[in-house]
Each structure stands twice: as C-alpha cells, then as structure tokens.
Length: 266
Image (tube, rainbow, N blue to C red):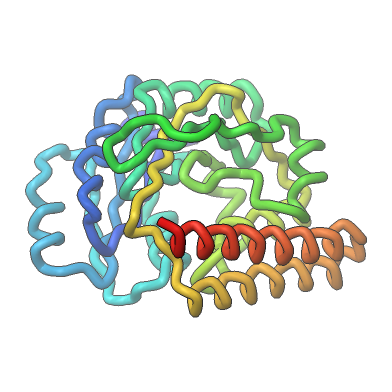
C-alpha cells in the first residue's frame, strides 16, 4: 500500500527543446482538477537556457532531471524509475491536457483494476491552438485494441496512463528512436496486459512545422516499424502482423508521396 504522502500519479515529460509550446504544456498539467500528482520533467541534451527556464517554475510538484543522452526511451525509463505514483501518465512538450484528464483516467483505472494501459481520444490543434482536422476515432475495448495493434499503435502515446508496476515488469521502454510506444504495447500484449481507451477527448495533440520529417528520418522510422512487426510475426505467428507490415509500408509511402506533391505545388 502506498503512503498517503506520496502522489498517486506521476506525469512524465521528456524535452530537449522548446518549440514555443512548453509553458502551455506544463501549465495544462499543473492546472489539473486532480491535484495528487507529481510532474517529472527529464531535460535531455538541452541548452543551459532551457534548463534555467525549467528551474524557474516554483511548483513543488515538479521534479527535474537532466541527462546528456538524447534518446526518448532512456529518458522515459529514467522518469518511470524515479516515479512515486501507482500510475504513470505520459505528456509531450507541445500538447495540452484537458483540465479533467488525470481525474477521468484515475477514476477509470481505480474502477477497472484489470486495465494496465489507458488511453483517451484526442483532438488535433495547430500552432495557434485551433482545432484542425477530424477528432480521433479509436478502438475503446481491449479486444478491439488487440485486434488493431498489428496495424497501428492505437494507444496514442501522449494520452496514456499506465500502471507503473506493469511497465516495470515488462522492462520499460526498450526500442530505438521511433515507435517506442508501439513496441511497448506489443510486448505488454504478449504478457496478457489489458488495454482500454476512453471515449472522451482529454488531450489536444499539436501539429506544427518543427515536426516535419526528413527523408532519412522517414527511412529510419519505416525500418524501425517493419522490424518490430516482423519480430511479432515471428514470436506470435499471427498472420495479422504480415498484413500489418504491408498496410503500414504502403500507407506510409502513400502519405509521404502526397505530402511531397503538396509541398511542390504550395
């Protein structure tokens, strides 16, 4: 049993630069209606200026760490290791939490102890915070999520809350520079962990220019995803992973081609 003095949720955020949205992201966590949490920020390969800025926050719930390793899985694992909460909630440096995000997820996790990982619906916003595109349309039940996992990472990473103990038992994040979340969900699925997504949009996921992907990064990302899906095909023997490889590769190349054509005609 956890001490009453400890937070029941640890929000973890890894950051190496501020694209102009960091303050809003941090404040959206600090302004949650659920108050019993800590915010662990791991600044990796950051400038002294950013580190000084992070230290300017006076809220005692913020716990800062600094590393020189610019690898997201490493820094997330460090945050999980330092976390005191029963539950860990992910957050990114350019997104915005809805005020009741932690309260809604905490209530669901407490009411459904069989669930290990809980995501939520989300809405896309632009650099100015305006809603763009269509809202997300996720699978909500464990069974539907498991059926969909060979085709996409259907647990949106910045929305998730998970049991710290479950992720530690799976050895935490363990995969490369891309798709570290998808890899973790696949490994947890093999351990018979349970998943769910809430139907409420509890996060605003920001799309902005600094997220643009180079050709070399695109090739790296494709290689990482094909690698992990091939691994799962071999380990589980599920034909869905073979279909997932084809679906991911064809879909990613199609989107990249469309983006190039639009850029040329812009």
